[in-house]
Structures are given as structure tokens and as C-alpha cells.
Length: 276
Image (cartoon, rainbow, N blue to C red; front, side, top):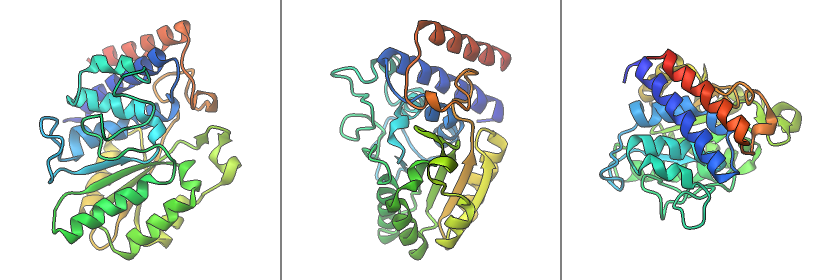
């Protein structure tokens, strides 16, 4: 995809996020919106995946370690063709395949159930190691939250990945600097993120995670990096794309009312029209 098409797709993913969380009357829009460009690039440019064969043993793997941002993940999967977009309106409803956190047993395209924060990276490291041991060429991608990496298990996994030189592993940290209780630096600062990952023998790239040109450069650099895993520190805006949600910790985990939903969809509609 060219950059314009990627930007249009990210805007559609944002519409899916707002629609699904509003339909559920609960969920996590803020961190889903901040990662829309990352989800877009992964599924529409970077990863070797095929919705018609979601269990292909040679597919690239993806683990959403910050599993509460499932609305963004589901919206990307729907647009990619894993299931109908209409399913997004069933988010968190009884009987829906789209529950509040990703479920690998029921959702096509989901490689790992996640949501217990801190655990997803360990799974991704295991997938990357398995590929090495089986002489497979697939790559493993893991999206973590900046609040999530306050969990100690993240750093145990990072230590192992660096030690085993898993250059088929790419970790992306969605660094929007907001978590449920406020700014990440005030709650329990993990900064400087680049130096910490370097200390665990990672190649580190810091970017604007809402800019496709920077994302493209970073992912290509990661592919070319051999002998060590890569961590991309993606500095993003929480709630990106919806003016009243941007940089507001309160939108970490709540749904819009009718007026807020209408306003959000109007803004995203105008943003989409401006790209045409």
C-alpha cells in the first residue's frame, strides 16, 4: 500500500474502534486509537498473513500483549477480511466471538489470547524461538503498552530474547504516556525506554508512531537487523483522531455517549473525506 492508502485504512480502523466500543457501551478506545497506524502497517503492509488461511504454519505471528486494546485489533482484522465488519458492533455482547480481550479459540487470525498484562511478550518470545528451532522463516511481532511494561515479566522475556539473539522478533511499545491512573511517568516511570531495551541487547528505534513514513523506515530497519531482537518505541497520542479523546487519560477505558459518538464519527468522516 502507498502512504495515502495506509492513512485511509487507519482512519477506517479508528471508525471501527469508536463504533465497536460505543456498541458495547464499554471498552478501551484511547490506546486502541493511538495504535491505529501500527495495526494498519502490520496487517496491510508488513506481515505475511492470509485471511483465507489463518492457520498457515508459515504465517507471521502477532501477539497483542496489551490485550485490552482489542477494539483496534479487531477493527484491523475485520478490514483485512478475517470476519465481516458488521461483527464489530457485537463487541463484548453475550455470544459474540469478539469479547473484551482477544480469544485465539474463537476469533480467526488471533494467534494468542491475551489481556493479563505483561504476559504477551513471553508468548511472542516463545513463538520466535520456536521458529528458530524449526528453521522457519516467519517473524513474530508483539505490541506492548507503556503502562504494561511496568510489569516485571516483560523484562524477563526481554532478557531471554536478547540472550538468544532472536532477530526474528519485533517488539513495538505504544508509548502514549498515559495509563488508567494518569501519566506513565507519574504512576511508575519506565523511562528511558531506549536505554532499558538496549541494556537487554535489543536494537532500538524510536519513532513517531502515528507517522507512516517513520513506521515504514523503522520496520524496514528491523528486518535488516541481524543477531539481536528489535524494539520500536512508538511515541503516539492516546485517543488519536478524536479531538476530545486526545491526550486524555479518562478515555483509557470508557465508551462514548450518543452525542460523543456522533461527534467522533463526524470528525473521522471529515478526516476520511479530506484524504479522497
